[in-house]
Amino acid sequence: MWYTVSVLVQGIHDGAPPVEDLWEERILLLDASDDAEAGAPARTLAEFDSVEYVGISGHRVKWRFAHVGRVCPIDAPVLKSGVEIFSRFLRKPFDESQDDNGRSRLARDPKRVRLHQ
Image (cartoon, rainbow, N blue to C red; front, top):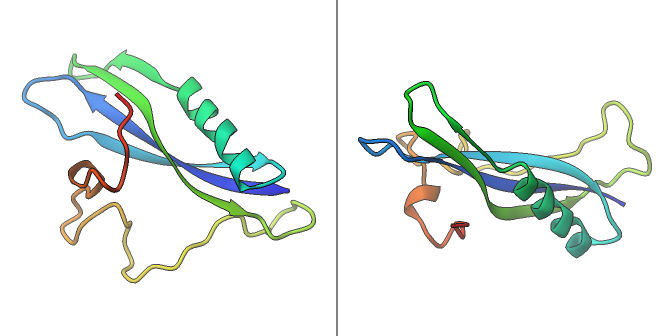
């Protein structure tokens, strides 16, 4: 069965003055026999994609795996053009990781995401 798996990746900047971390949500498509089996390779793929580089400002930037989020089965017998692979209900028309002012909630709420150090 096919699944979409959401993973969060944290962009850590080591410059001065301190820069608020940036977050990226990735949606991966995985073939697995159940939800638990779909989550493990998602974590492995996200950890494998960890990267470090010097940004345009001259500061080091590190992208690190932070969290496996939603694991959702794709309810379709065959993957083809037009098949729905992701949906969610929202109470407000903006990203759930932002507060009403567009600031990241993830960085300020340690219960929402376990950071990988």
